[in-house]
Amino acid sequence: MNLYDKSSLILVPGAVKDGKVYSQRPENGDGDFTFSRASTATRVNENGLIESVSSNTPRLDYTDSSCPSLLLEPQRTNLVTQSEYINGGGLSKIGSSIDTNVSSSPEGLVNASLLKENSSSGSHFAYKDFNLTNGATYTISIFAKSNGENRNIRLGDGGVGWSYDFDSDFDLTLGTSTNNGVIEDYGNGWYRCSVVGTTNAASSRLIIYSTLNTATNYQGDGVSGVYLYGFQIEQGSYATSYIPTYGTSVTRGADSASKTGISSLIGQTEGTLFVELDIKNLTGEYRRIIAVSDGTSSTVIALVLTSIGTLEAYIAIGGTYSLIYYGPTLSTGLQKLAMTYSANEARIYRNGTLLTTDTSVVVPACSNLYLGKIETASTTGIIGNGINQALVFTTALTDSECIELTTL
Image 1: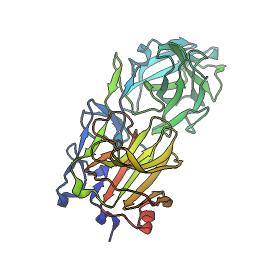
Image 2: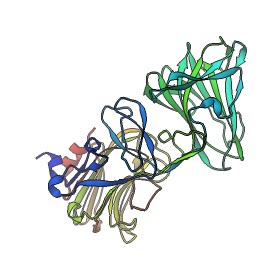
Image 3: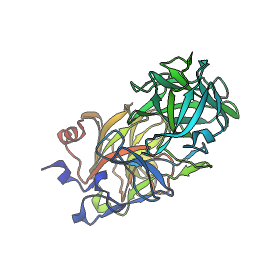
Image 4: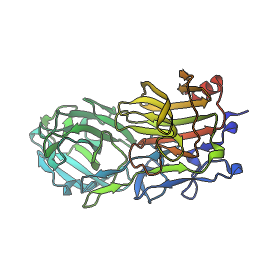
């Protein structure tokens, strides 16, 4: 028998229809998942373009793949008030100018700007001091594309307002970065470049350099530079999906995907949870991946990505834990995770390998399934990545079945 046929619930993002995420088990009468988000949000569509979707609509995101994942993110606010009109954001220009609406952006519209070097010998950059919360961690991101031979970008802080200096270089040809910078390929020469910093003053500086290879001091030609689009500053330790702004800061609501009142589809004495996800950021807040519970965080079976990028699994009844497993540090990219549970035993798997077996488990009665979180009311601790698929079984799969299911 195919393992998928043994499952009681299946979530495959490609099953989204009419704005609903279906579990693909209509014979069980389980219908669709409840999904909510109290705002519009963006995704990368099947054509590789950034687009906005309406509130309470699940986001099928095609970033880096021809197959979609269900994007689940926490609430974030873009503090940049003119995210697309780069020249309207109060940036000061040195050895450069900014031309507006000169190239097609990752949105597919001609709304990208050009940070253009002048013909002098020296530095060519734009900068601004932002009023941020002292002692908070922020992620700065911007989409960039080279215009001219070996023209790249550097994001720097000039030593003003941050607890450590970041000077991250981004190669817009090779798609590489330095000094903890993160670069993501968005196609057609566009990359999203981001850095993370913690403030130590009320005013914090950001410098956007146009570089020749990695040199910030060079002879400009009056034409070359870097195209820019989608400027974002958000409080948090990793970049989330792009939040467009048009004159004021904008908040994107938290995503929620759950199915409640389905105790018959969740194993009450034994079962298996499986999830496949694409991890883009290891560090961040304590983030839930998949969980079944009674609707609270105290009676629950869960797989978690910790704030330092390690895997955690636990089983609890009324806040009393019969399993707490602290696993290995995960890696970015595709991960397949599974946990089986039954009377006195739980087993955890990752990418085709059995990580641990625990023989002191007490199984809780659970009626709800949550993706990326634990309980309905939660707006924090959300996974912040795409879920490629999720399976729930009312039986504890065998060792060989779990290895087969989680092998990449």
